[in-house]
Length: 136
Image 1 (cartoon, rainbow, N blue to C red):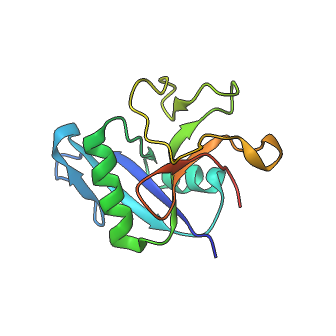
Image 2 (image 1 turned 60 degrees about the vertical axis):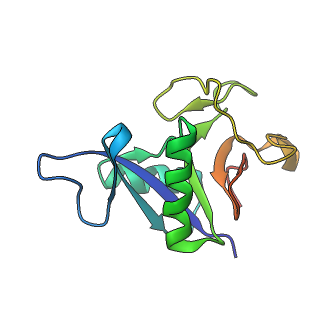
Image 3 (image 1 turned 180 degrees about the vertical axis):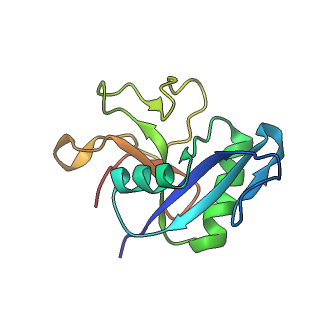
């Protein structure tokens, strides 16, 4: 079974991170992994309803932090994060609208836009790499 786990980014509050969140010091942000089944849009809604957005692994440090966070919840699950090419095919942008940039860690052969050209969202799969399928 494929499991959707949304990696949520949340600003630090004056009192610290909300319950259930992990603090990432270099970016001074709080993160949480939600272990719920669903597609990318469900993950976006889950994060929004908790006051945040899907996490964005902008660099190697935060990428490693998020992989550790997802593995602590379920190392065999798929985890959505905020990166899509829904607006323009092949042009991936983060959930905040910023272009992907130079840090890319795709799984071999990804992004490949398989399954009838309907792969437009990024997730971690079991292992440290990314793929780009939006729904299962």
